[in-house]
Length: 429
Image 1 (cartoon, rainbow, N blue to C red):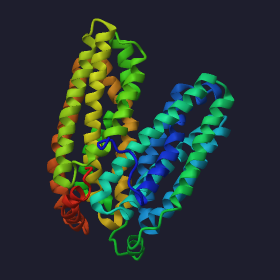
Image 2 (cartoon, helix red, strand yellow):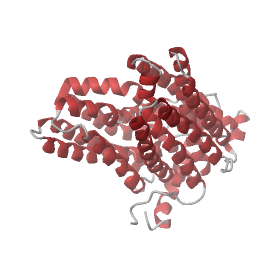
Image 3 (cartoon, helix red, strand yellow):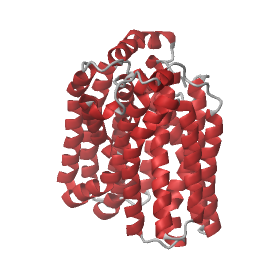
Image 4 (cartoon, rainbow, N blue to C red):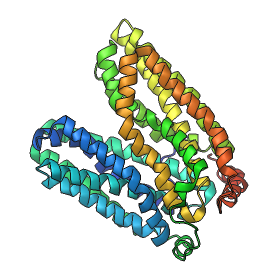
C-alpha cells in the first residue's frame, strides 16, 4: 500500500536505517532481559539497579553535549563509529559484572556512550541528508527502530522463557555484537564534507556555544516535557492496569503492540506533513491536544465495570496516544535540526537529545506518583502539562528562529525553500 512505507530510499538514509535496525534488535532483547539478569543472576536488588540507572542516565545527559561537540570537530562519521564500538564493548562488559561497583561503572559507560552515539548519529544525518529530507529520514529511522525493538523483544522473550544464565548472557552478547555490526555498517557511509574542517579551525565561535543559547534551551526544555510520554507504556500503564482497572494484565502487551505497529506503519506518513518550522510547531501544538485526550481516555479506563470495557477503552487510548507520539516526533525532529547551526549539529543534537535521557531519568517516578496517587485528576494534570508545553512551543520556536545565531537563519531558509519541492518530487507523499 502506498501510504505504508518503512524502508527509506537508497543512499545514506538506507544505510543509516540499516545501522539503526541492527542495534535496535539487540536493544530490544536487552530491554526485556537486562533487569531480570542483574537481579536474578547477578543478585542485585531492584533499588540498587534503579539507582545505578538513574546515575547513568544523568551522566549520559551531560556527556551528550561534549561528545556531540567532538563529532563537530572530528567528523560525525568517525565519532559515530567509535561510539557504536564503545557502546558494544560497554554492553559486553555486563557479561562479566559480578559486583555492584563493577555494575555501576558499566552502566555509566553504557549510558554515556549511548547518548554520545545518538548525538553523533544525528549530526551524521544532518551532514549527509539535505535539510528538506531530514525529518522524513528521521521518521524512517524511527519506524526502523520500532520494528527492530519488536523483533528483539521477541528474541528476548525466548531468553525469559528459558530463564537460564546462559540464555540471558546470550541476549546481552547479541546486543553488544549488534553495536559492532552497526559500526561496520556506518563505515559504508562517506564522511560529510566541509563542516568539521571549519569547526576544527576555530571558526565556530566559543566552544559548546549551545550552553549559552537560551532560546534553544527553552525549546529543548519544552521538548523534554513532551517526552515525558515515554514512561507511560513501559512503567505507568502496567501499574495502572493492575491496580486501578478491571482489564486483564495481558492488555499491557496489546498496548505495546498497538504503539509499535502504529509507529512502524504510519510515522513516515505523519512526518510528510511537516515541511518547515511553522508546520513543525503546529504538529507539536496538535500533539499537546492529542496527548491530553489520551490522558483523559486512560483515566476513563478506571470507570469500566467489566474487563472488556476497560480493555477497549485502554486500546482506544493507546491509539490516541500513538497519534500524539507521532505528531510530536515529526515536529520535534524538524525543530531540533532547523534551529541548530549547520557547523554545530553535534553539540546541539547532544543537548536536544538530552531530553530523552532526562525523561527516562525523572519520568517514571514523576508519572507514577502523579497518576497512581492522583487517579483521574493526576491523568488530567499530566494531560494539561502536555497541552501547555505544546502550546508554548510555537512562541519559543519563533524566538529561537530569530535569535541571530550564525547559520540558523540560512538553515531555516533552506528548509522553507525546498519544503514544497519535497512533496512535488515524490507523489507518494
